[in-house]
Image (tube, rainbow, N blue to C red; front, side, top):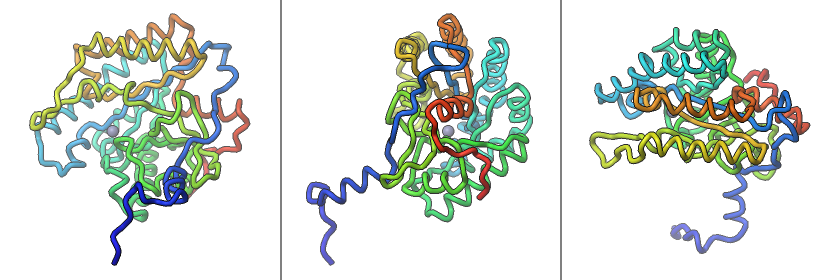
Length: 306
Ligand SMILES: [Zn+2]
């Protein structure tokens, strides 16, 4: 029994194989946006609610109450602002969160928003064997469809965590897109083991995630470290960069985080700024459908069964 070689001892074929398991393929930056808009805005909200604690064992009634705030106050505040601006958005909802808050999901769909897969109970995909990960993703999709009466066509993995099997399962399910990885500013086609998959990646970034700046854990050193004004400044610069490039501005927020009275105005300001620059507001699914059509991607329709 020899010891496994250290990374610096690996042959080239080994490290090339590792980075080719899931990799960005061709860019899907479109030559134009609908209506001649100069750039696109894709707002998203991960409706984790109580599942952030349930995923860790369900031991903290306090953390569950923070999650419940997301459903009671955060999500309605967000939906009110989106409605006022007539801005569609995408909500990624763990199945357990959807079952705990079915009325919220129905309101989202009624108001023109997208609901996407976000795990069963916010489990970490990289900790799961293939069979369990596949079973949970299928059950999550079916549960979201039953609750919201809208069939999800895309996924954002919980905690943006990706196992070596995640993309394979996405392909097997016939999903149109993933929104969990960050190899570009603009959409791109995902490749698996060096082969194009037809699956669109709509990339995220930690920089454009409210949780990074406002995260809080009573029993660790994690505390909010950025003032709301500074977070808006970061989001604004990302937005202005996307506008200058004619590209895509994507943002990730959480109802229990951005939904606080002292922060919700950030969302309002971001939308106002984007509107003043003539942005095309769309759900992630709508952005994906547009870039796939403009770039001639022989992609997924999201209709395939598994
Ligand atoms: Zn989440």
